[in-house]
Image (cartoon, rainbow, N blue to C red; front, side, top):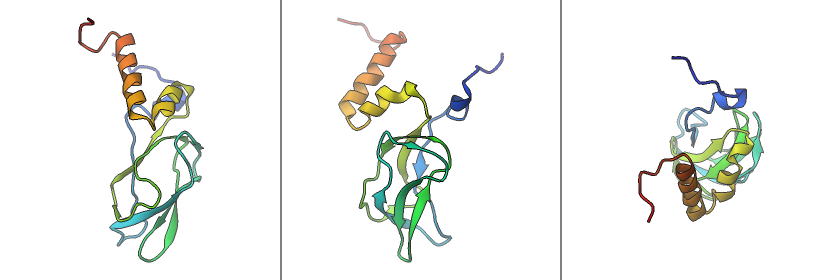
Length: 130
C-alpha cells in the first residue's frame, strides 16, 4: 500500500506541531515572554521574529524556522518563568484550509463547534441524533 499523496505545503505538516520554549543558551532553564511580534492568524516565514524572550542575562528574539501561520498562542505576553520545553504556540501550514480553525482559535466554544461539524460531515461522531 502506497503513501497518500499530499500537496507539497502539506507534506511536512502531516502531524501536529507544537513550538516549545527554546533553550537560547546552554544554562537556560526558563525564560519570560516579553512580547509576541506575531498574533494568532499571522503568516510567518523562516527568519521572522515570533517573540522576544527575556532571560536573567539578556533579551533575545525567537525566530520562525519554517513557513506557516500562527494558529494559537498558548503563553501570553508578559508570562514569567516559562520552563524550557513548555509548549508556547501552535503553528499551522500556510493553507486556506485552516481559515475556519484560525478564526475560531481564540474562542474555545467556536473551536469545539468547528470540530463537531467536521466529525459530522465526515460521518464520524459515533452518536445518534435525537
